[in-house]
Length: 237
Image (cartoon, rainbow, N blue to C red; front, side):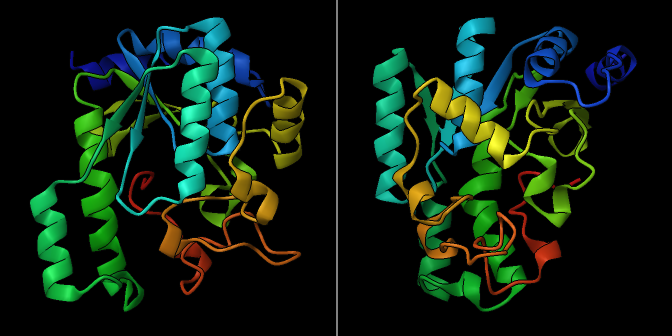
């Protein structure tokens, strides 16, 4: 039996609207191997870091430094490192791939069309993610159902076919933005300063803007694209 088949047969049944602690405990047990948190230093990921400190503090935390992150993202990463004595496993895009992209297509090719944007994300995010997941039996994300139309049916536990059939754990799948912030404030957790400037979702600096009143939380990501396209490739089904 392959690892993928093993995980599929052992996925636990969770109660409707299971809370993050239940999802994390079930996912960590079901993975039957090392699990890592992919951290973009959003408020969601920071809440999960705090939960893991209570449940499984040995869980590896990794981050993808695309080379185009906001300064505020580095600042909150350092705050977390100091508060929790947290080791962050940074992964970077391959220099030769970035160099080739920028030399042939310039610095903003991702704004020209969807294929170019996917190419940039593949180089800066998807390929480093695959390296970061080497040897992992599962990974944890900060995705939530209410973030966007692309995540409306997000399961709390799923098989990640795109990354070798390992387990993907989405502990905040059922939580609202308000619940996430209530938890963060109750624990006085450090958060990205851009959240207070109208950025509920934060990615690369040139691909993220503050949202307007009434827009969904991911409207500021790749704002020139249609809502159904607002994924970078890390979470494609």
